[in-house]
Length: 186
Image (cartoon, rainbow, N blue to C red; front, side, top):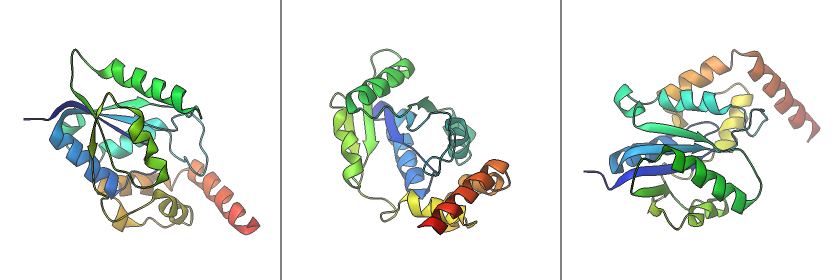
């Protein structure tokens, strides 16, 4: 028996790491469906957001069984740099996925100052988690990735495969060159 009809999991997932995986596994145990709100979903790439929304969908789904994949839905949230507009956008996109009278919750944990958004959706029950997998941050993982290293201890298998393939693309080499140039200038 599920506690929720839908749990909303908001993040950038740049890239999708083990703490994200753990959160999503808990969400799937607690809810009939999980709606992942992919942040920074605009179509251009940068060093902070190297992966497009569709690529992140593939990266995330690659870590789950076909049965679980059917219970995971995605909405794309572009950066709007205004909390009120952002909350409105998230609610609109999530509501497009919800059928009928549903019990909707928000899953996450208060990691640091960037987690304040969890309090911006009072109409959704917060399913708050303790810090998972220690306190891991994607920033140093991305930096290692640009140096050519995939820190496999932080990633589920589907993400490792995705990152390995991505490193073979011209897009990766452009981002890597940009990263290395920025490092040389610091």
